[in-house]
View 1 (cartoon, rainbow, N blue to C red):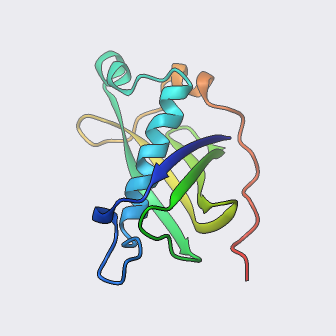
View 2 (view 1 turned 90 degrees about the horizontal axis):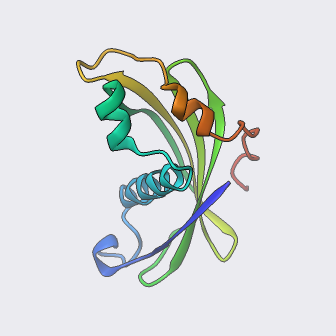
View 3 (view 1 turned 120 degrees about the vertical axis):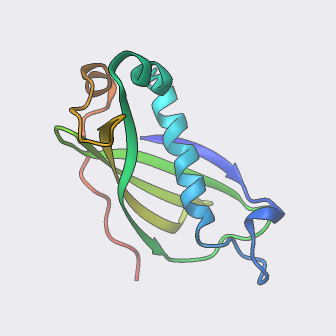
Length: 139
């Protein structure tokens, strides 16, 4: 599992002073990029060498509690499934260990023409073995 820290800035909040819901997707995107970088995966090199790019195919998000201006958040990322052309990740946004947002993201490997592609072997070899999905959102 990988953890990436993010500070909530004024620009991330709405009129009520809480993080605008769509900004959690930005937070998880940044954490995914850092997760891959930490594994030694160079997305620019993958595109250059194999013509494969990645797109979000599906996102599920459960909003459990709000984050506020100046909060220090942690985004955890774990691989839950690896398919021929897809990778599914569990990403939780937490504050002080409490889950605020729980997401599941499926990434698809695509050729530059938009058609599905097999996951490059270098990526497949670098990804950690899938962990089971975490428990559902707290009641």
